[in-house]
Length: 168
Image 1 (cartoon, rainbow, N blue to C red):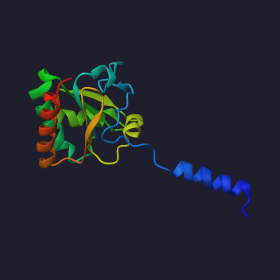
Image 2: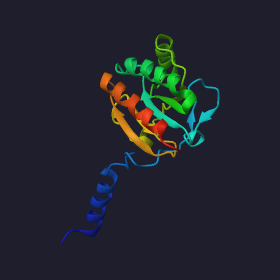
Image 3: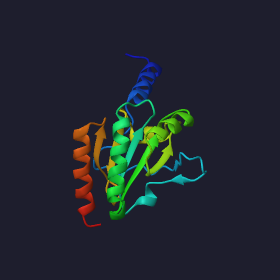
């Protein structure tokens, strides 16, 4: 017979080792407040974007595929903003000046927020850079993209179009 304290310790370790609940297709998007990258003291919430189709993109200055994804997302945003499409770029750099240098080379016009503490990345359970979560008008995650290639770009454009065409 095992000692009860040892059994409890093993159960506690197993509970800690179990993965956090990941954001999956069909789940509601996390609603955490996200501080704007421009250090304006303002924050953004996904709840404030309810009624719009939103793409939440986790990116960093050191992420090579992000050099491809950011201009593509900016183009998609500009083409569809008037129809209710938003992009939120969540920066994962620890130092904001790294993000600023990247953005001078790859400027974008969509909302940028900071997540140097990893709170939002943990809430979404981000495993790959870049990672993107396409959220419908009701706040439900409909598609998840890990990494970014030309086929990702084509699939995302098609998915955004379909969600924008859905009745609210």
